[in-house]
Image 1 (cartoon, rainbow over the protein chains, first blue to last red):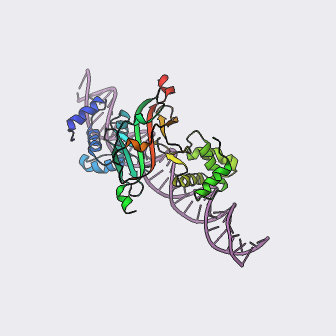
Image 2: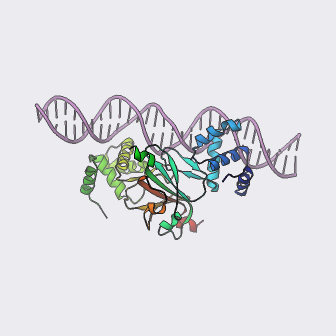
Image 3: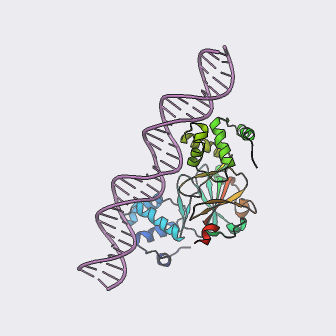
Length: 140
Length: 140
DNA sequence: TTCATTTCTGAAATCATTGCAAATATACAA
DNA sequence: TTGTATATTTGCAATGATTTCAGAAATGAA
């Protein structure tokens, strides 16, 4: 499960991205995180480790990774964007009460569910479910 | 396909929403639109018809409808929210090049694709696909 | 080293969205 | 009809996440 820095570095290079200290740290953080961090969270988490870091750099770097297809950006919560380093096909659930975001396994690929995709080139797919999580359901 | 104002009015009342002039006009516009209008677009479209209309009213009213489950809000484009009056289960595609948003038919319900939903209460589901639309694929 | 290119920084700007308080419309009792 | 309470709309100011920009720093090649 744990991936080495060297591997992550190679992955960046393979994607045509120069592995600067900041980029590698941000990449590692998002990939290892089981949460779904926002740019702000990434910034807070890495500020100390890196000594100096600009929020702008975090935004730019995350955008760079998303464009390169290395991580994905979630817009499941309308008030902020968060990022996901988990590259397996999976769906997301957001609880309307506590706001938690949970990964859900898929039985099949997204596109198997959709008709009429001839002629389309699909580069990204996200399935968002919203409602109440088991925890909030109970104490409702 | 065409729904009368009277029917829409009844639908609002049934949802516990008083059918003011503005609300009815906004509801009709979003329901009839085959596009996926933003609040701004709704505002521009109805400004003349209603004589006076506030952008704030549009935002508030759309939120009211979404909370009542009458329409749904899409966050497929990270830079703005748009609204969808089509109540059939369907997926959305957004072209990365021209920005068009297209409705796609589903073969099955969203939840059939997901594992481990025991204990969850699902109130909303959205499948977002992104990439290139047939038109942009050709002239790529 | 030097030069050119890429990357990072921090402050300022942007812009969709919301908060707020006043104005207006509506419902309904007297 | 009039008065009054409630619901709705309005317009503007404020918010806050995100982006822009121009200069500073780091990096790589020669």
